[in-house]
Image (tube, rainbow, N blue to C red; front, side):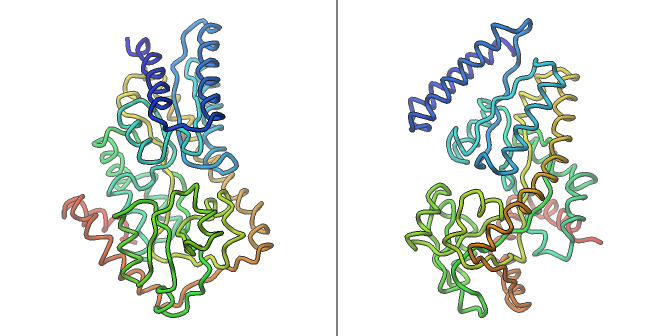
Length: 355
């Protein structure tokens, strides 16, 4: 019975998006109508009506995240002989991250790659470098298996999500036009933040920097106009959003990393047969391996691009790195501890710091 109901739900989602203006450009509207038509033709030509999985992410189509989505689609459709059909919506086509999070939690969108900081425990894991000296490789291992992975899956399940995979952690950088050699240099920054009242806002403001809310799609022009001069992000974002012509430095952030997750609406996942669930898991597992290889190749291909624009890699002094870690402990960790509860917080910290 669940399969019969999904088509109307999808059509209602498309109608809702078009009426509320989540997709405003005519080209995007045509893309959605074409997707609906393609799905209709697929169903009419199939012996068995396929189960449609809407997969959303925020990356541009040249980045490893999108390539991973395409790879997952191919793997799952092959494994299921087309009975599971994946429709990909990149670059926040279905709305920004917060809009899409609501659609995901309601089940209108069944799957997402991203939302790496969607739960307090994931936020804590992203701050692992501020807690101790765990290497990225060791952190990656603990995110894949063992007690920390079990805790992550439980917290996602409590939020109505099925955690399929955690992608390898990546370094974060302060992409800016200001060399940071002394603590006073932070006062010269106007840092882009994604939303108001974000913990990042308090963090950078405490260092003396200004903060400005800027949508990621507007960041390039804001850097060009010098309305902001700094942005904390990963290298694929800097490359994919073509920010490099307006940057001078990439300064490694010592206290925070980033990783994507592959998640599925839990109710939808549980509605699948056991065999279909195993297909989803297998496709996700293969996709993680593919993502790791594709991400390394992507950075290698674009390394000379950054160099050609004169973007310099810098590291902070040991004194400034310690300042940023202390700042994180003061402005970011307390809120996470309050959300997790003292017992779970301290257990997770132990799992992230023990050698």
